[in-house]
Amino acid sequence: MSLGRYGWSPFFEAQLPGPARSVPGRVRLATARRAQLYAAKRVVNVSVPRNVGPAAVGDWLLFNPKRRTAVRVLQRRNAIARNRPGHTARRQILASNIDTALVVATLDRDFSARQIERYLLCVEESGAKAVIVLNKADLCPDPGARTAACERANPGYPVVATSAVAGSGLSALTRHLGDHDTVALAGPSGVGKSSLVNALLQSDYLRVGSVRSQDRRGKHTTTRRELVAHPRGWLLMDLPGIRELFPWSRPETVDTVFTEISELGGTCYYRDCRHGQEPGCSVLEALEEGRIDAGRLDSYRQLRQEQESLARLIGERRK
Image (tube, rainbow, N blue to C red; front, side):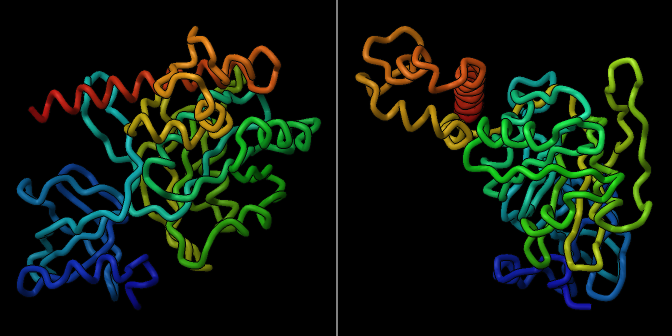
């Protein structure tokens, strides 16, 4: 089978040749020192020596087919990453070489707009296309109104309401997926990411967990990342739920998520306006007039501050 089925492209072809007798394969599953690869003719299990470095699901590796040992991780086209919890500045790759990321929330309870913004920031930094998916529409009395509200709150991003149980919205969702796309599903536990993968596959491939009845919060059913091949050519990856997401991004990428704020900021009196208490601030004027949301502005400020602090820490570490 052609490697194009698994996302091989001229970007990776340009990084060849590798070491003698090495061939490429894409990481389907990975642990610290082992990886399972989609190769040209079969799925292969290989060891990943320390000198090769960590391999993430979605990576392309060169490996020796006789020894079944990885020899190099090819340069990534992109990566969705976060700052590791408990570390001041340590990057953790959640998914690599992604074309489309589905940021999944749920309609059976009040979804967190702030959480969606954090996931969107991770996706924007990677350069992948982001689609917001509001799942469990069958449990919502008015999914259309909730979807419209989410569209107004996140200008520029497509929003699709789905029900993995009822199968509704799946056709609308797949229209946002290109041929042979690698698609990552990201979001907290309990929003139905595994159920969406199963619905798209039309099978019970991934194990699905329950949610707690008292607060509708999900359990961490997905504990590992895995690339699943879809018959239509997509590669689907269900990312484990994350309680606290600290994006690994640049400060300026925050502006691409909050376009209504960044566009107004360009007309502020001061070029370096922080949109706090500065005179002549167009953003504060719009807030007073009700043209922007106070929660969005607070989130913008917090994410800018987080990413500026991260940039300083990274700069200090490199000195």
